[in-house]
Amino acid sequence: EDKVVQSPLSLVVHEGDTVTLNCSYEVTNFRSLLWYKQEKKAPTFLFMLTSSGIEKKSGRLSSILDKKELFSILNITATQTGDSAIYLCAVEHSNHQLIWGAGTKLIIKP
Amino acid sequence: EAGVTQFPSHSVIEKGQTVTLRCDPISGHDNLYWYRRVMGKEIKFLLHFVKESKQDESGMPNNRFLAERTGGTYSTLKVQPAELEDSGVYFCASSQDSWGPAAEQYFGPGTRLTVT
Image 1 (cartoon, rainbow over the protein chains, first blue to last red):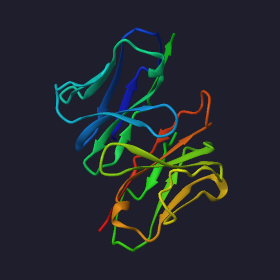
Image 2: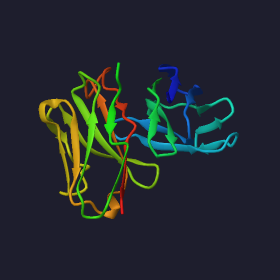
Image 3: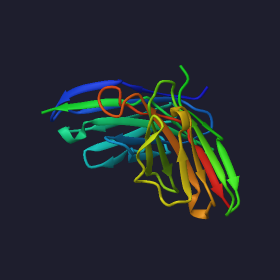
């Protein structure tokens, strides 16, 4: 059965800290892995990863995929209170359906 | 515990036809959300039910889309008549509450709609 597992489930850090969020998966017919940030309703797209070893960066956020070990990490450096959110990892199946992780709830304390 | 399920997984219809997508939320979850992912990576909000009531339907694109949640359990999203631009993947999510610690949404795998 396809599954995506995120860890930790929740994380509380102080502003300025660096955090690493993990996403491991077992999915047949892998197409891509996506990271989203969810604050209110619709998740906001962060990254789409399809190739191993290529780091994608956007400001203080970066992500990388390891297709051999079947995991991805999302790094956030110099965290700010605005980074507080639920971070969702999803693996896109070849049929375009997404298998979602349970999310990591990140709380940044001032 | 069963997660959010959606049916069908993929639907291919012709322009002008009608399609009904179904979402079964996690049992006991009063909040149900519909989202759509069109072409790209962004996921757009469509609407939010609290039990059988529409709490927020600001994301519904037009009156060809009709969502219902009779009895406050499963929900359907009907597109009638379907247009080419309606193609995409429709996601459903549910949560126990709409705010607070139990507001985390659990997503279904989506229904891929292809309009030809």
